[in-house]
Image (cartoon, rainbow, N blue to C red; front, side, top):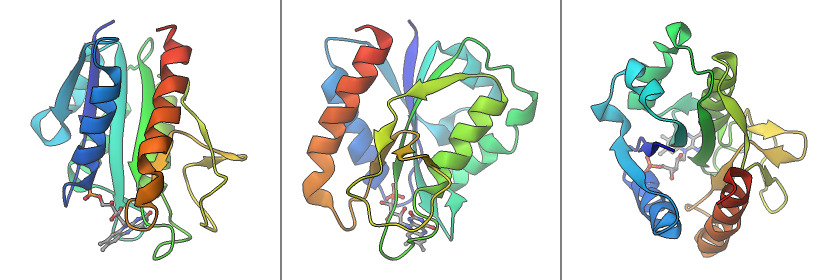
Length: 170
Ligand SMILES: Cc1cc2nc3c(=O)[nH]c(=O)nc-3n(C[C@H](O)[C@H](O)[C@H](O)COP(=O)(O)O)c2cc1C
């Protein structure tokens, strides 16, 4: 399974989480680390499995290099591509747009017929009021709030990686 972790970041935090996730998959799955600023939209279909990492910026907006890809995704056929998501956000300063970027990007992948549902995590423990990334009582991926809950980051990553490995049969 040809795999990549594609991340975008403005101030570096998403890359730190990306490295922790890659370390957790080490020896289990070979995952290429890719800065979203270095690829074109059509490159996305080069892989069989993608982990997409995205922080929310402005008010409920995608990180800017991911936004450039997102804007061009409508012509992509993502059938057969498996995607798992992680997002970074700030639930106290942006309680009603918490993790929106992760949700918006996930929904775009679903529109393009990628296979989702991998690594959904409970919203319990997050204090937001609204999120595009919330589906019922779950987020559509790993929600990290390093601004307010950094003490929970490592355990959240560990639980999510275990779930993703199980979903992939690893
Ligand atoms: C100006 C600004 C706007 C932000 N807007 C949101 C937002 O709407 N929703 C959210 O969940 N987090 C928001 N955040 C929090 C960032 O997503 C968070 O700090 C994240 O860790 C940044 O990741 P990065 O360093 O990889 O860019 C915002 C942060 C800043 C400074």
